[in-house]
Length: 288
Ligand SMILES: Nc1ncnc2c1ncn2[C@@H]1O[C@H](COP(=O)(O)OP(=O)(O)O)[C@@H](O)[C@H]1O
Ligand SMILES: [Mg+2]
Image (cartoon, rainbow, N blue to C red; front, side, top):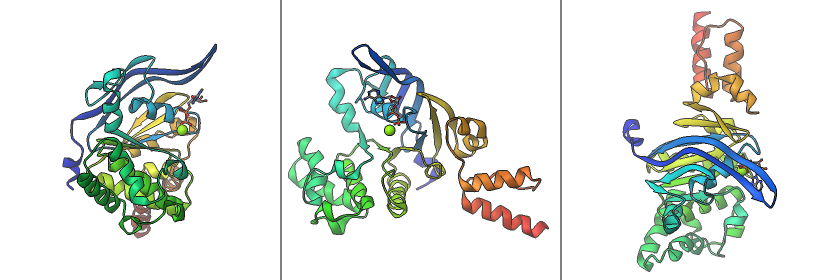
């Protein structure tokens, strides 16, 4: 897909001056504050932040699971605070969570993926079509008749993604969906997510504390203590090292190495991917 055509100007989710606190009795715990952001159709957006920085709270505000105390969240123009539209809002913004085992509801993969559309009252023939397409998208067609229990963590998360896709959402939010996986499982999910975004044009909001998962994002939002403290293209955000560090995050290895080389006086550009770093080191070698 043409890069320029991938991200449109259409704003699918907008948060404007959003605050949210958790309350139980007298006790108030701040979730997020002063949140402003827009998600455009086709975008691959990453929300980065350490534990407790407010990422999950923000995610739940974006799909109407939580309603702002202050400010407004709209999903394709609909205010999430509108009680009459809440199911409409939630069906447009699908969420994949952290623990793959908690997301399985059926004992056969295809039933698990069919569960969402069945609840939406979709006709049987169309459910079949949706299940086939969703499993194909996540590369799990051959496991259709199998049991989710026998799958690896990465495969289970791919089924969880398929189950969301079968509901045909406009946006998919993944809330630390790779956090419990081994490196192979993480790679599987990242490949699936990139394919979803780049090939299928799906709008993706990926929430993570792994910097390396943010490298290919269109934009990154860094969260610290309930606030967005930095945002922009990955390179711009990573160059702003102080804010990244203040948020308790580490730069990707390629960025750390290129930063150290630049500081040591070598003439090379700041890199965020291993490929960029390798290329600039090769060029440097030719100059020496
Ligand atoms: N159910 C809850 N009740 C009370 N406080 C909560 C609840 N969930 C989250 N918080 C608080 O809100 C803040 C942000 O949490 P969260 O959004 O879960 O962060 P993250 O997903 O980045 O780890 C933290 O201080 C956390 O303790
Ligand atoms: Mg969280």
